[in-house]
Length: 463
Image 1 (cartoon, rainbow, N blue to C red):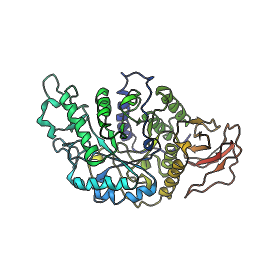
Image 2: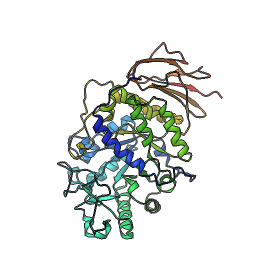
Image 3: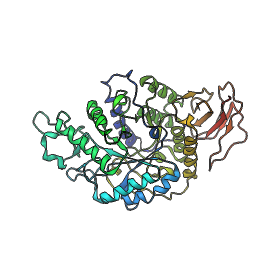
Image 4: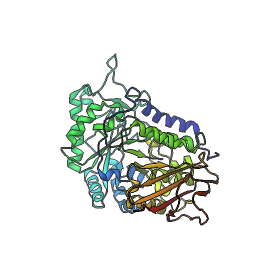
């Protein structure tokens, strides 16, 4: 079960601890809920999400730099753009030379380094013209220490001595908002309406949503739908089913990601991914929608953690499972530029022409197109298939009434041979993916896979 050695174990452990805190923050909530989840819009359920850090996405680090690359994103096949916070940043107690994008000074304004409000409107309009939705990042739990909202001291929580404080002791650059104050709640809801109404954004990704009372989100949802009935609201929380019943359309699959980390580092066998997936299925009501990711702004880049081939194998898993897959800021070219803390507080642009990579953009484009062409990939039906190399290989079926796909992924860095427990392998044909060398000697149910190799097979369902 030898796998790639993940770099920077202490740093990685520290960063992942934040995600473990998010997951454990829900421990006081019921582990399961019988409430049916919201029915997310079809464009989200069938979509592919792309997270953009405007500061680093282009050399100019602004809205126009994003607009200039919209054709590339459209060609890749992504149809939902998630923009990290676009607002002016706080100066007081900021981290690094530029500060965190999640340390917001004014929710009603745009960061002047990113351009003007007209530049932002143009970005949204141009995205819509290409059939892409735009989701804004909203940081509802806190502000910077020099926020314009400090004009209302009662908007903030205070300790026993009357002093304001961060929501988490480690988040020294921000101060916690007080949702016991109805005036604050009104301010935040009206602010989100403003971006929906005046700029035409299609929804929000809510950062550290678990730090804000659920009933606020439920009230906000009702009011925001009066402006845009088809909006989406995404929470970065995981393992909290109640959030998906009334307020949010989708959450993070944090448990699956953490299990993937353990598998890729060799600490757990590959079949633990199935156990993690099945645990979440039991915890959430049928139809709950989860974000599938290997990379985002809070983590060292997946290419650096897993290697190029390992990241491609892991992202192929996310693109072929249920849920909504995520790409992040140059991932489609194998960018390895740091972006997590402390790089999050600096400007480190994506390097768009890295060497020594396979044709990742072509491979990902074909995988996205496969997902778009066949609804079997966007329903909730995942059937796990046992195999004789379960320490290293995951295998599962995706199907609907017309099509059936078999996905086999080696998550180790060494070759494996084995076989699938597949009662009827007849009719499966290998799906050809651009930039991939296709084996000619793999005869199902037998398997022969190189390190981080993966195969997708298709057959039509018999009438």
